[in-house]
Amino acid sequence: MHVEDPPPGDKRIDHLLPIRCEPPTKPHGTPKSLQHVQQIANEGISLHLLNFIGPLAPYFQQAQVGMPVFVRALSPKFGDYYIIPYFKAGKVTAMVIVDAVTGQFHGASACTVNWNQFPPIPKERAKELAFRHSKKEIKQIELVWGFCEESKSPYTPLWQVTFTDGSTLFISQRGTLHRQITKHSCIGGGRSER
Image (cartoon, rainbow, N blue to C red; front, side, top):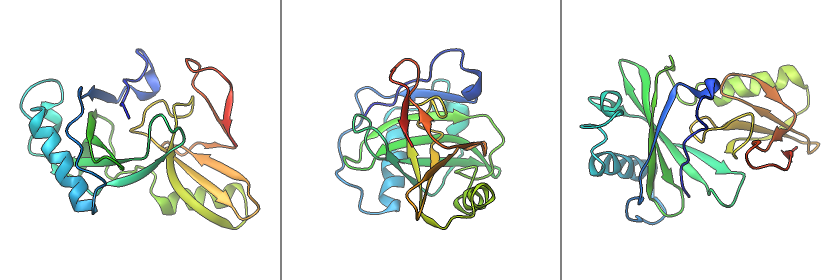
């Protein structure tokens, strides 16, 4: 997995300031717990000095680590991962990505929007939005990400709601609803998930 910078000039995700860490940190193996994921995130920040120098330092300095959130990848090229939010004064100021299989620290991003939780649309809110759209019974709801027009950054995954009849709905972290998602234009190929 490699965390890629979003395309330059994309105003919909200008609140993210991603940093790729090459090479990624050593593999820790599959994380054993959410606390282990937090430990890997903190070690990666220290190893890359992200809280001391560079553009992310102000966002990580004196920030407290939050609870990791699991994201299922829609592309095998990217792989499942955790997003670990960091908080200062009750607001998300930065996020880290850790591979869910290898336990590697892969990158970090500043968050300059006014989020007081992560994900900004919590699961219960996503369920409410889905129920407003369709009265069908929900079978499963999970955070997912693939490089698509609806979410160009792995730091802003989508809620994928699967109904008992097999139909699917995607909900962005801005609360927008999508019946399907479209592969990003730089990848080509049009619709990718229904």
